[in-house]
Amino acid sequence: MTPRPASASAGLAVRGGPRSQPTAYARLVLDVVDRIPPGKVLTYGDVAELTGRGTGRTVGTVLSQHGHEVPWQRVVQASGRPAEPLLQQALRLLAAEGCPVEGERVVLTRARWDGT
Image (cartoon, rainbow, N blue to C red; front, top):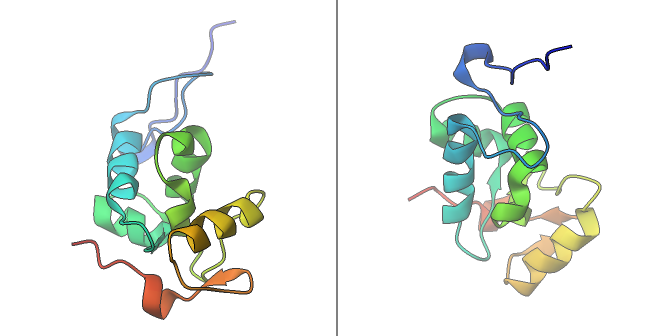
């Protein structure tokens, strides 16, 4: 049986095979995430908006596949909470960078990066 090609829905292919290289869309996402300064965060939706394509969900998929290549902890849910299952690790990394954290959430009003 021939393996299925990576999804290319709306040109937002994000999945390849094991240890695959990032797609063009994934590279856009990773480039945005890599620019987030220490102590600042973006939401998944913010990252999608800055790329001009995709959704928060597609950004999450990219980070689940290739997040180890960038400061993944700097992307949080719209509530300010880092995604599971690396919640505690993300909170530790963010706090070490000087990001304002209260409980299990980033204080978005102080930590959200404007993308410039």
